[in-house]
Length: 290
Ligand SMILES: [Zn+2]
Image 1: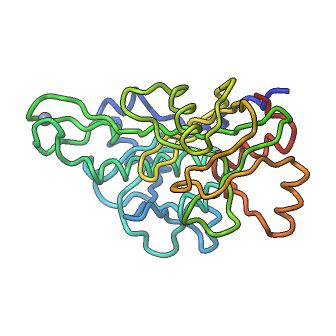
Image 2: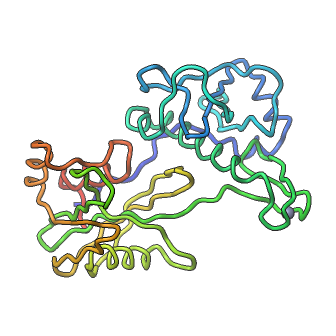
Image 3: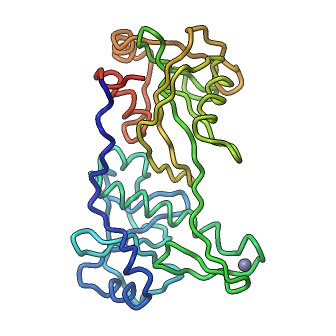
């Protein structure tokens, strides 16, 4: 069986045409249904006190392109984000991602990604000139060298490794709380393909060789700017040699053993908002095959 298709159910329209026109973006700011959410320096979003819902505000004052970024529209209602310390309660994307619906999670993830990018991108990396926000916040333009600057994304691979019996490899990172485990992950290096990164990371962290590698889906992870690319792979043999530096230990588990250990509190799985959680859940449901 194959994993269920990785369908994105978000209704967010990123207004990719309208945002090219500053007058359109300014008009959306004045729209009676326009909403703004705040993201602070630690990527926390304005939320309800329980961290279950985004808390938005009506836009106040004039539209300022350098500070107000258009996320997009949902059913014609514009959503903006501003870098601001929320007045009142706030919650992290890690927390909110597990409870928001897909549209709200898309809005929240994009809000954090945009604010994180603008925070570190005020100057041109080529000529050092201060750049200007364009396209509602999805681009910065350098007046010094006439270059367009777009948000950077750092690709990382995350891999569910199955042995010949279909058991799943879970590893424990040094520095994690003692019971926490997850599937293995690592960043893609300069000039490296995703497939090569999967094989290199897994060889480094577990000593395992892979016979097959298949892409399953992705998740933006703006901490500060990663894109997690999920794979499922089949290991050749089951002899694990962890690196000891990054991964302290790793074992193959059957679904039955994993359930027993999690129920007993001996193992802790990744938080619900993560792609790791989704991939592990698919394997436990019997719908993930290499
Ligand atoms: Zn420049």
